[in-house]
Length: 175
Image 1 (cartoon, rainbow, N blue to C red):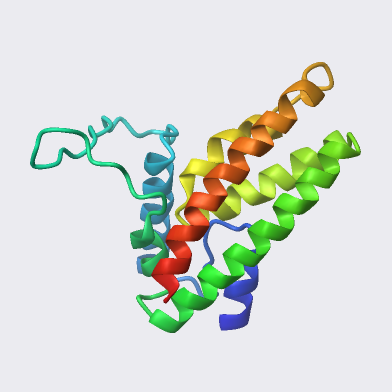
Image 2: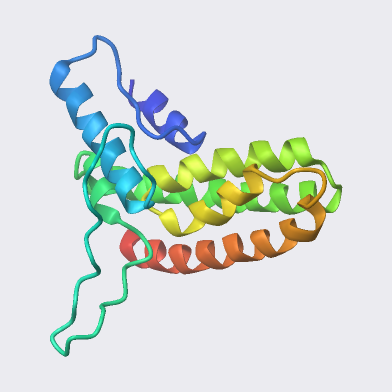
């Protein structure tokens, strides 16, 4: 159901398949998952693909990578402009709320909530093509009691910065 799909993405799921499952849809979902892993520079089980080097501009310098990979998000929304706008809006709202909750969890030194919120937002950001947030969020997920409170504020700052850049890009893409 269409409403379920949006709720799942907003909750941090990486993809959504409805029943009855079709082989072509499963194959497409697996390809999207592989692409998300490649974009996040994470190894996928069984993959031996070499990473591509950054594209070069006409002057031979590296091109700056876009902060958001819209292709996967467009594909996930069936290239439907209205659904893309709604998904972007949901992501922005969810990410802002989760970042605020993450800040509060860090301030109150609640490591369990920090890890859960970081995990949730990491999945959502990867689903929505924002891998720049993923590394700091992964580090927040992996904190332990020894180092958590010295490292968490800086990791949150990094995540907030990556989100601000992505938010500006997505707000322009949404219009």
